[in-house]
Length: 108
View 1: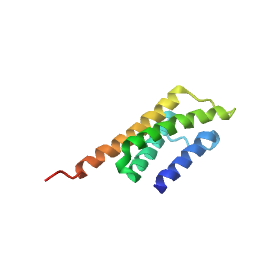
View 2: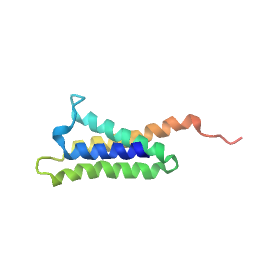
View 3: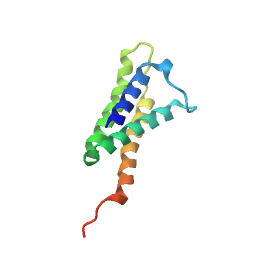
View 4: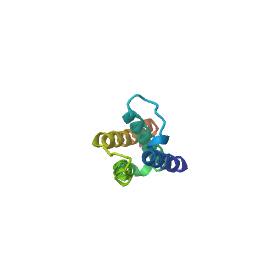
């Protein structure tokens, strides 16, 4: 849970401070996608019995982080950026759910 919280704080910091964001990929949308995939994956790992809630909160965080950019005059929120964040959040929870499948107990 601590890793997910740290990941969330890093995403919030990088969302509001554009000049400090590292550019890893040619298209910044991939950075956003991977960041929210990591956040939702770690959140799902912390709360494996509450995957629908984790998915919902991850999507709300993705949309909320894009909406926070309205508060900064130097930032410009875009729909495509929000979509990439929502896809990443959904992919992270989906990857965790798929990774958990082989370890599910089957009734005897």
